[in-house]
Image (cartoon, rainbow, N blue to C red; front, side, top):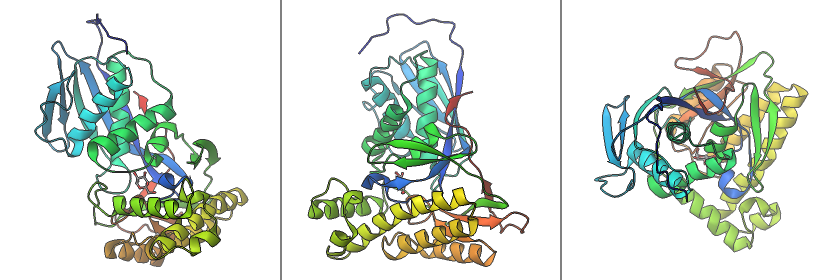
Length: 355
Ligand code: GLA
Protein backbone atom coordinates (compact mmCIF):
# COMPACT_ATOMS: atom_id res chain seq x y z
CA UNK A 1 0.00 0.00 0.00
CA UNK A 2 1.30 3.44 -0.88
CA UNK A 3 1.15 6.18 1.71
CA UNK A 4 0.39 9.65 0.57
CA UNK A 5 2.72 12.11 2.25
CA UNK A 6 1.85 15.34 0.47
CA UNK A 7 -1.45 16.64 -0.74
CA UNK A 8 -2.11 19.40 -3.22
CA UNK A 9 -4.10 22.11 -1.51
CA UNK A 10 -5.59 23.21 -4.82
CA UNK A 11 -7.82 20.14 -5.30
CA UNK A 12 -11.28 21.39 -6.07
CA UNK A 13 -14.39 19.49 -5.15
CA UNK A 14 -15.47 16.68 -7.46
CA UNK A 15 -18.92 15.25 -8.16
CA UNK A 16 -19.69 11.68 -9.07
CA UNK A 17 -22.92 10.13 -10.25
CA UNK A 18 -23.81 6.47 -9.64
CA UNK A 19 -26.85 5.12 -11.47
CA UNK A 20 -29.42 2.70 -10.14
CA UNK A 21 -30.31 -0.25 -12.34
CA UNK A 22 -33.16 -2.16 -13.83
CA UNK A 23 -32.76 -5.88 -14.33
CA UNK A 24 -34.69 -6.84 -17.45
CA UNK A 25 -34.52 -10.53 -16.58
CA UNK A 26 -32.27 -13.00 -14.71
CA UNK A 27 -33.22 -12.66 -11.05
CA UNK A 28 -31.44 -14.40 -8.17
CA UNK A 29 -29.01 -15.87 -10.66
CA UNK A 30 -25.95 -13.68 -9.94
CA UNK A 31 -24.92 -15.43 -6.72
CA UNK A 32 -25.66 -18.76 -8.42
CA UNK A 33 -23.13 -18.37 -11.25
CA UNK A 34 -25.96 -17.73 -13.72
CA UNK A 35 -27.07 -15.16 -16.29
CA UNK A 36 -28.73 -11.74 -16.02
CA UNK A 37 -29.62 -8.85 -18.35
CA UNK A 38 -29.51 -5.56 -16.42
CA UNK A 39 -29.01 -1.96 -17.51
CA UNK A 40 -28.05 1.26 -15.71
CA UNK A 41 -30.84 3.87 -15.51
CA UNK A 42 -30.77 7.65 -15.39
CA UNK A 43 -31.90 7.75 -11.75
CA UNK A 44 -29.20 7.49 -9.17
CA UNK A 45 -27.07 9.11 -6.49
CA UNK A 46 -24.77 12.13 -6.77
CA UNK A 47 -21.90 12.53 -4.32
CA UNK A 48 -19.91 15.73 -3.97
CA UNK A 49 -16.48 15.29 -2.37
CA UNK A 50 -14.29 18.13 -1.15
CA UNK A 51 -10.88 17.56 0.46
CA UNK A 52 -10.64 18.72 4.11
CA UNK A 53 -7.72 20.13 6.05
CA UNK A 54 -8.02 17.81 9.06
CA UNK A 55 -7.94 14.01 9.38
CA UNK A 56 -11.66 13.30 9.04
CA UNK A 57 -14.26 12.16 6.59
CA UNK A 58 -17.58 13.93 7.06
CA UNK A 59 -20.77 12.93 5.29
CA UNK A 60 -24.17 14.53 4.90
CA UNK A 61 -27.09 12.56 3.49
CA UNK A 62 -29.15 15.50 2.20
CA UNK A 63 -32.33 13.57 1.45
CA UNK A 64 -32.71 12.34 5.02
CA UNK A 65 -31.01 15.27 6.78
CA UNK A 66 -28.48 13.03 8.56
CA UNK A 67 -24.74 13.37 9.20
CA UNK A 68 -21.79 11.20 10.05
CA UNK A 69 -18.08 11.75 10.59
CA UNK A 70 -15.10 9.57 11.45
CA UNK A 71 -11.31 9.58 11.23
CA UNK A 72 -10.07 8.65 7.73
CA UNK A 73 -7.66 6.21 9.35
CA UNK A 74 -10.39 4.40 11.35
CA UNK A 75 -13.69 4.22 9.45
CA UNK A 76 -15.09 1.53 11.72
CA UNK A 77 -13.39 2.76 14.89
CA UNK A 78 -15.68 5.09 16.80
CA UNK A 79 -18.90 4.12 15.04
CA UNK A 80 -21.92 4.34 17.34
CA UNK A 81 -23.94 2.60 14.65
CA UNK A 82 -22.85 1.59 11.20
CA UNK A 83 -26.17 0.60 9.74
CA UNK A 84 -27.93 2.13 6.72
CA UNK A 85 -26.23 4.76 4.57
CA UNK A 86 -23.46 5.33 7.13
CA UNK A 87 -22.31 1.74 6.71
CA UNK A 88 -21.93 2.35 2.97
CA UNK A 89 -19.79 5.45 3.54
CA UNK A 90 -17.57 3.89 6.21
CA UNK A 91 -17.33 0.62 4.30
CA UNK A 92 -16.40 2.32 1.02
CA UNK A 93 -13.65 4.34 2.71
CA UNK A 94 -12.34 1.23 4.47
CA UNK A 95 -12.42 -1.04 1.40
CA UNK A 96 -10.81 1.54 -0.91
CA UNK A 97 -8.05 2.08 1.65
CA UNK A 98 -7.58 -1.68 2.14
CA UNK A 99 -7.27 -2.04 -1.66
CA UNK A 100 -4.31 0.37 -1.60
CA UNK A 101 -5.96 3.63 -2.65
CA UNK A 102 -4.52 6.55 -0.66
CA UNK A 103 -7.65 8.55 0.15
CA UNK A 104 -7.63 12.04 1.64
CA UNK A 105 -9.81 13.57 4.38
CA UNK A 106 -12.99 14.54 2.58
CA UNK A 107 -16.36 16.23 3.10
CA UNK A 108 -19.03 14.20 1.31
CA UNK A 109 -22.51 15.36 0.36
CA UNK A 110 -24.95 12.72 -0.86
CA UNK A 111 -28.13 13.39 -2.84
CA UNK A 112 -30.24 10.95 -4.79
CA UNK A 113 -33.34 10.46 -6.89
CA UNK A 114 -33.67 6.70 -6.71
CA UNK A 115 -36.01 5.63 -3.90
CA UNK A 116 -34.51 3.34 -1.24
CA UNK A 117 -35.93 -0.17 -1.01
CA UNK A 118 -37.63 0.21 -4.39
CA UNK A 119 -35.70 -2.54 -6.17
CA UNK A 120 -33.82 -0.06 -8.37
CA UNK A 121 -30.64 -0.51 -6.36
CA UNK A 122 -30.16 2.75 -4.57
CA UNK A 123 -27.40 0.84 -2.77
CA UNK A 124 -25.24 0.24 -5.87
CA UNK A 125 -25.91 3.83 -6.97
CA UNK A 126 -24.61 5.01 -3.59
CA UNK A 127 -21.53 2.82 -3.36
CA UNK A 128 -20.40 3.44 -6.96
CA UNK A 129 -20.88 7.21 -6.64
CA UNK A 130 -19.06 7.22 -3.28
CA UNK A 131 -16.13 5.24 -4.71
CA UNK A 132 -15.63 7.49 -7.72
CA UNK A 133 -16.03 10.66 -5.63
CA UNK A 134 -13.54 9.52 -2.96
CA UNK A 135 -11.00 8.46 -5.60
CA UNK A 136 -11.55 11.71 -7.54
CA UNK A 137 -11.06 13.91 -4.47
CA UNK A 138 -7.81 12.05 -3.75
CA UNK A 139 -6.73 12.35 -7.40
CA UNK A 140 -6.36 8.60 -7.53
CA UNK A 141 -6.68 6.73 -10.84
CA UNK A 142 -9.84 4.74 -11.31
CA UNK A 143 -9.31 0.98 -10.88
CA UNK A 144 -10.60 -1.65 -13.28
CA UNK A 145 -14.40 -1.44 -13.16
CA UNK A 146 -15.00 -5.14 -12.55
CA UNK A 147 -12.60 -4.94 -9.58
CA UNK A 148 -14.40 -1.81 -8.38
CA UNK A 149 -17.74 -3.64 -8.62
CA UNK A 150 -16.33 -6.42 -6.42
CA UNK A 151 -15.11 -3.83 -3.94
CA UNK A 152 -18.55 -2.17 -3.80
CA UNK A 153 -20.09 -5.60 -3.32
CA UNK A 154 -17.75 -6.28 -0.37
CA UNK A 155 -19.01 -3.06 1.21
CA UNK A 156 -22.56 -4.34 0.99
CA UNK A 157 -21.66 -7.86 2.19
CA UNK A 158 -19.23 -7.04 4.99
CA UNK A 159 -20.34 -3.60 6.19
CA UNK A 160 -24.06 -3.48 5.49
CA UNK A 161 -24.72 -7.17 6.13
CA UNK A 162 -26.57 -7.94 2.89
CA UNK A 163 -25.24 -11.04 1.13
CA UNK A 164 -26.07 -9.59 -2.29
CA UNK A 165 -24.29 -10.60 -5.51
CA UNK A 166 -22.54 -8.51 -8.16
CA UNK A 167 -25.49 -7.73 -10.42
CA UNK A 168 -26.24 -4.19 -9.29
CA UNK A 169 -22.65 -2.95 -9.05
CA UNK A 170 -21.68 -4.33 -12.48
CA UNK A 171 -24.79 -2.78 -14.06
CA UNK A 172 -24.06 0.57 -12.42
CA UNK A 173 -20.38 0.57 -13.40
CA UNK A 174 -20.57 -0.95 -16.91
CA UNK A 175 -23.96 0.19 -18.27
CA UNK A 176 -24.28 2.38 -21.36
CA UNK A 177 -27.01 4.32 -23.12
CA UNK A 178 -29.17 2.11 -25.33
CA UNK A 179 -27.68 -1.16 -24.08
CA UNK A 180 -28.43 -3.92 -21.63
CA UNK A 181 -25.62 -6.14 -20.37
CA UNK A 182 -25.70 -9.93 -20.62
CA UNK A 183 -23.59 -10.93 -17.65
CA UNK A 184 -22.42 -14.49 -17.11
CA UNK A 185 -21.65 -14.61 -13.40
CA UNK A 186 -19.68 -17.85 -13.69
CA UNK A 187 -16.98 -16.04 -15.69
CA UNK A 188 -17.98 -12.36 -15.35
CA UNK A 189 -18.04 -12.16 -19.15
CA UNK A 190 -20.13 -9.16 -20.23
CA UNK A 191 -21.82 -8.91 -23.62
CA UNK A 192 -23.56 -5.70 -24.71
CA UNK A 193 -27.10 -6.21 -26.03
CA UNK A 194 -28.79 -3.29 -27.85
CA UNK A 195 -32.18 -2.65 -26.27
CA UNK A 196 -34.44 -1.81 -29.19
CA UNK A 197 -38.01 -1.87 -27.89
CA UNK A 198 -39.80 -1.03 -31.20
CA UNK A 199 -43.01 0.67 -30.06
CA UNK A 200 -42.86 -0.64 -26.51
CA UNK A 201 -41.51 0.88 -23.31
CA UNK A 202 -40.31 -0.47 -19.99
CA UNK A 203 -41.85 1.01 -16.86
CA UNK A 204 -41.37 0.36 -13.18
CA UNK A 205 -44.04 0.78 -10.54
CA UNK A 206 -43.27 0.75 -6.85
CA UNK A 207 -45.38 -1.93 -5.15
CA UNK A 208 -45.43 0.12 -1.94
CA UNK A 209 -43.81 -2.71 0.04
CA UNK A 210 -40.22 -1.69 0.76
CA UNK A 211 -37.55 -4.26 1.34
CA UNK A 212 -34.16 -4.34 3.00
CA UNK A 213 -31.79 -7.06 1.88
CA UNK A 214 -29.97 -7.23 5.20
CA UNK A 215 -33.19 -8.03 7.03
CA UNK A 216 -35.39 -9.83 4.50
CA UNK A 217 -35.62 -13.32 3.08
CA UNK A 218 -32.82 -12.58 0.62
CA UNK A 219 -30.04 -13.99 2.78
CA UNK A 220 -32.18 -17.05 3.53
CA UNK A 221 -32.68 -17.77 -0.21
CA UNK A 222 -28.98 -17.39 -0.75
CA UNK A 223 -28.13 -19.97 1.90
CA UNK A 224 -30.76 -22.35 0.51
CA UNK A 225 -29.04 -22.10 -2.88
CA UNK A 226 -25.66 -22.77 -1.28
CA UNK A 227 -27.11 -25.80 0.48
CA UNK A 228 -28.59 -27.08 -2.80
CA UNK A 229 -25.26 -26.65 -4.63
CA UNK A 230 -23.45 -28.48 -1.80
CA UNK A 231 -25.92 -31.33 -1.95
CA UNK A 232 -25.46 -31.61 -5.73
CA UNK A 233 -21.67 -31.37 -5.47
CA UNK A 234 -21.42 -28.38 -7.85
CA UNK A 235 -19.59 -25.11 -7.32
CA UNK A 236 -22.75 -23.08 -7.95
CA UNK A 237 -26.34 -23.97 -8.85
CA UNK A 238 -26.07 -22.93 -12.49
CA UNK A 239 -23.63 -25.81 -13.01
CA UNK A 240 -26.29 -28.35 -12.00
CA UNK A 241 -28.34 -30.33 -14.51
CA UNK A 242 -32.14 -29.99 -14.39
CA UNK A 243 -32.47 -33.73 -13.80
CA UNK A 244 -30.17 -33.66 -10.76
CA UNK A 245 -31.93 -30.56 -9.38
CA UNK A 246 -35.29 -32.35 -9.57
CA UNK A 247 -34.00 -34.99 -7.14
CA UNK A 248 -33.34 -32.42 -4.37
CA UNK A 249 -35.72 -32.28 -1.41
CA UNK A 250 -38.19 -29.39 -1.31
CA UNK A 251 -37.81 -26.40 -1.06
CA UNK A 252 -34.27 -26.74 -2.46
CA UNK A 253 -35.66 -28.47 -5.57
CA UNK A 254 -37.85 -25.47 -6.41
CA UNK A 255 -35.10 -22.93 -5.65
CA UNK A 256 -32.77 -24.76 -8.06
CA UNK A 257 -35.51 -25.06 -10.67
CA UNK A 258 -36.02 -21.29 -10.58
CA UNK A 259 -32.31 -20.62 -11.13
CA UNK A 260 -31.96 -23.08 -14.02
CA UNK A 261 -35.13 -21.99 -15.84
CA UNK A 262 -34.32 -18.31 -15.26
CA UNK A 263 -30.92 -18.73 -16.93
CA UNK A 264 -32.74 -20.14 -19.95
CA UNK A 265 -35.13 -17.19 -19.99
CA UNK A 266 -32.23 -14.70 -20.15
CA UNK A 267 -30.94 -16.11 -23.43
CA UNK A 268 -34.49 -16.57 -24.73
CA UNK A 269 -35.10 -12.87 -24.04
CA UNK A 270 -31.96 -11.88 -25.92
CA UNK A 271 -33.07 -14.02 -28.87
CA UNK A 272 -36.55 -12.45 -28.80
CA UNK A 273 -35.04 -8.94 -28.66
CA UNK A 274 -32.81 -9.73 -31.65
CA UNK A 275 -35.83 -11.07 -33.54
CA UNK A 276 -37.85 -7.95 -32.64
CA UNK A 277 -40.48 -10.14 -30.94
CA UNK A 278 -41.46 -7.92 -28.01
CA UNK A 279 -44.62 -9.91 -27.25
CA UNK A 280 -42.34 -12.87 -26.55
CA UNK A 281 -40.17 -10.69 -24.29
CA UNK A 282 -43.36 -9.88 -22.38
CA UNK A 283 -44.25 -13.57 -22.03
CA UNK A 284 -40.77 -14.28 -20.69
CA UNK A 285 -41.10 -11.50 -18.09
CA UNK A 286 -44.36 -12.99 -16.87
CA UNK A 287 -42.84 -16.49 -16.81
CA UNK A 288 -39.95 -15.12 -14.74
CA UNK A 289 -42.44 -13.65 -12.30
CA UNK A 290 -44.34 -16.93 -11.95
CA UNK A 291 -41.08 -18.74 -11.22
CA UNK A 292 -40.01 -16.13 -8.64
CA UNK A 293 -43.42 -16.33 -6.99
CA UNK A 294 -43.99 -20.09 -7.02
CA UNK A 295 -40.54 -21.70 -7.02
CA UNK A 296 -38.46 -18.99 -5.35
CA UNK A 297 -41.26 -17.73 -3.07
CA UNK A 298 -39.92 -14.18 -3.15
CA UNK A 299 -43.16 -12.28 -3.80
CA UNK A 300 -45.53 -10.49 -1.43
CA UNK A 301 -49.23 -9.53 -1.86
CA UNK A 302 -48.46 -5.88 -2.76
CA UNK A 303 -46.20 -7.06 -5.59
CA UNK A 304 -48.86 -9.48 -6.85
CA UNK A 305 -51.46 -6.71 -6.91
CA UNK A 306 -49.07 -4.44 -8.83
CA UNK A 307 -48.28 -7.12 -11.41
CA UNK A 308 -52.02 -7.76 -11.94
CA UNK A 309 -52.70 -4.04 -12.31
CA UNK A 310 -50.00 -3.71 -14.96
CA UNK A 311 -51.22 -6.71 -16.97
CA UNK A 312 -54.74 -5.25 -16.87
CA UNK A 313 -53.31 -1.95 -18.11
CA UNK A 314 -52.16 -3.72 -21.28
CA UNK A 315 -48.63 -4.86 -20.40
CA UNK A 316 -47.22 -7.65 -22.59
CA UNK A 317 -45.59 -8.94 -19.41
CA UNK A 318 -44.71 -7.86 -15.87
CA UNK A 319 -42.54 -9.17 -13.08
CA UNK A 320 -41.11 -8.39 -9.68
CA UNK A 321 -37.59 -7.05 -9.90
CA UNK A 322 -34.47 -7.14 -7.75
CA UNK A 323 -34.10 -8.93 -4.46
CA UNK A 324 -37.83 -9.46 -3.99
CA UNK A 325 -40.06 -9.45 -0.90
CA UNK A 326 -41.33 -6.03 -2.01
CA UNK A 327 -39.89 -3.29 -4.20
CA UNK A 328 -40.59 -2.43 -7.81
CA UNK A 329 -42.42 -4.24 -10.58
CA UNK A 330 -41.14 -4.03 -14.16
CA UNK A 331 -43.55 -4.11 -17.09
CA UNK A 332 -43.44 -3.88 -20.87
CA UNK A 333 -46.16 -1.52 -22.09
CA UNK A 334 -47.08 -0.36 -25.57
CA UNK A 335 -46.03 3.24 -26.27
CA UNK A 336 -49.06 5.51 -26.57
CA UNK A 337 -51.23 3.60 -24.07
CA UNK A 338 -52.06 5.67 -20.93
CA UNK A 339 -49.55 4.74 -18.24
CA UNK A 340 -50.82 3.46 -14.90
CA UNK A 341 -50.43 5.79 -11.91
CA UNK A 342 -46.86 6.22 -10.66
CA UNK A 343 -45.33 4.29 -13.57
CA UNK A 344 -41.83 5.53 -14.35
CA UNK A 345 -40.40 4.96 -17.83
CA UNK A 346 -36.93 3.43 -17.58
CA UNK A 347 -34.29 3.25 -20.32
CA UNK A 348 -30.59 2.38 -20.40
CA UNK A 349 -28.43 5.33 -19.32
CA UNK A 350 -24.71 5.93 -18.80
CA UNK A 351 -22.52 4.17 -16.24
CA UNK A 352 -21.22 5.67 -12.99
CA UNK A 353 -18.92 8.60 -13.74
CA UNK A 354 -17.29 11.78 -12.53
CA UNK A 355 -19.43 14.74 -13.61
C1 GLA B 1 -30.54 -7.72 -5.37
C2 GLA B 1 -29.07 -8.03 -5.18
C3 GLA B 1 -28.47 -8.59 -6.47
C4 GLA B 1 -29.30 -9.74 -7.03
C5 GLA B 1 -30.78 -9.38 -7.06
C6 GLA B 1 -31.65 -10.55 -7.41
O1 GLA B 1 -30.72 -6.67 -6.26
O2 GLA B 1 -28.38 -6.86 -4.82
O3 GLA B 1 -27.15 -8.98 -6.24
O4 GLA B 1 -29.06 -10.91 -6.31
O5 GLA B 1 -31.22 -8.87 -5.81
O6 GLA B 1 -31.46 -10.90 -8.74
